[in-house]
Image 1 (cartoon, rainbow, N blue to C red):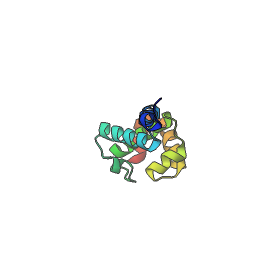
Image 2 (cartoon, helix red, strand yellow):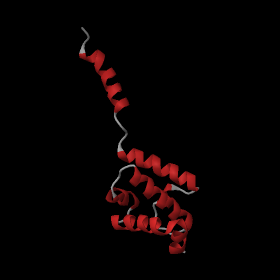
Image 3 (cartoon, rainbow, N blue to C red):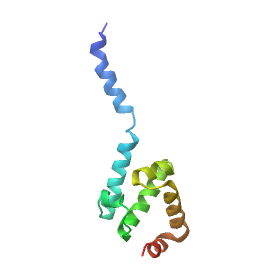
Image 4 (cartoon, helix red, strand yellow):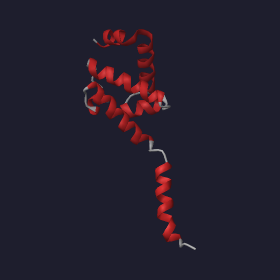
Amino acid sequence: MMDREDWMPEVDRVIEEVTPPKPSARVGYTLAQIAEAHGVAVDDMVSPCRKRELVAARVDAYRVLKALGFSYPQIARWFGRDHSSVVQTLQAHNRTGARGMRRAVS
């Protein structure tokens, strides 16, 4: 019979492998991927700046995070905004498309 000390490290390793990543790690990775795709920095994307390229990246980030199952308040917290701002941005984007968002930001 094996001692607990012999098999516990293996159990811990298996648990770590099957445990999903923490939401904050997944968000960080997602934001980094979206920022890279848009050619912007994550810090700029989450800033209050309203440059077109940052707004486009931010909208994509909102959409992806919402599709991943995060709530509006959670998304808003990561961007330092009120949840109603996230809701309004996504509604405006769905209503007018990217072209309308460009006009709204200009």
